[in-house]
Length: 169
Image (cartoon, rainbow, N blue to C red; front, side, top):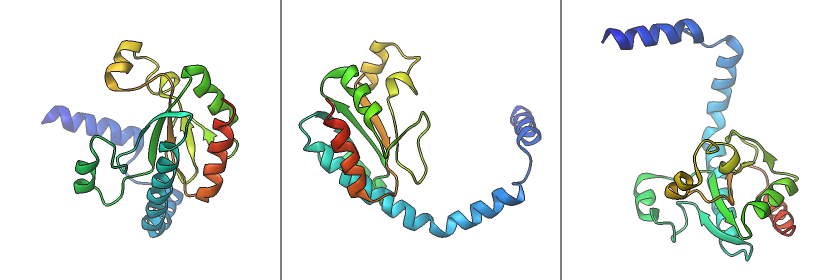
């Protein structure tokens, strides 16, 4: 349809039709290690989700790789790995979650997630800040939720950072 063609044309003018040489080089280089990086993301995320599941200061863990996740069976059918995103709810509410966030040393606090480094955000004050408390609750997003994009760092270092940070509450 003409309206779709017009939209594509507009984006092509804004974004360009091809990658710049450095972008193309980085894409090609990154593709060579993608499988290894994804395998490490998956392994680290599963290890962290399992660790958090047993932690006394964590109320709930959201990760499709855990058998207790409501969509675990579906995830097993659809995925080869369960990804690098792990969300968890801290006991003690918003103040406790914010304290944990401020205590991270290895894990970077960022509003966007993804990359080879571990990042964390609170949906309450980033991705879902425009939603009302009622809307967040309906979506299953607790105010004390911390969302983690688990990187490929040494998993023991990531656990140590989480343990120390959770120890502040």
